[in-house]
Image 1 (cartoon, rainbow, N blue to C red):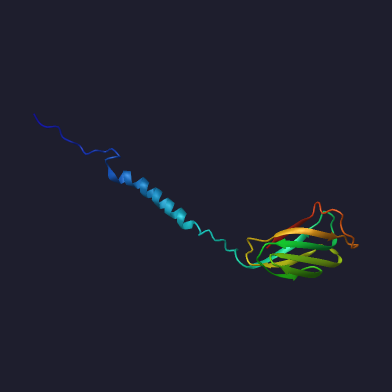
Image 2 (tube, rainbow, N blue to C red; image 1 turned 30 degrees about the vertical axis):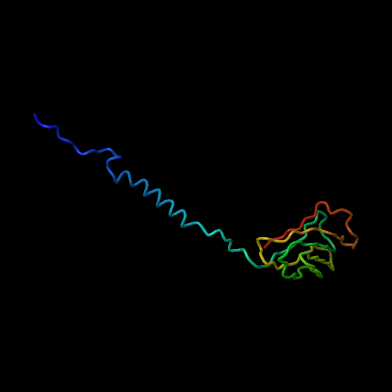
Length: 144
């Protein structure tokens, strides 16, 4: 009686290259995805200028008084009209007076453009220089 002949196994678990390839494929895909990731630092972060514009429910305005809270304001540059500003600690008040009715705007230089200071509208004057009785509907747009 002869001993049975053993044939080589064809199961995937015993055939090593098939068992390794899916692991290698997943590893290569993950490595490719990680290589495409950035370090989490936004290239727009850091010092720069932000344009500040009053958005009015009434259309054209005559003047605005804003107060910014928080550090990092490095300067204020006129946009439309005459601009006056005063800094005290972490508060900066900015007043824009328009010679002709329009949309008050200016440029705020900040330490980090991704962390703009908080802003509050203190007063708005109509084109005839009377103070608006309500600030409802007003907003300040801050952008690059």
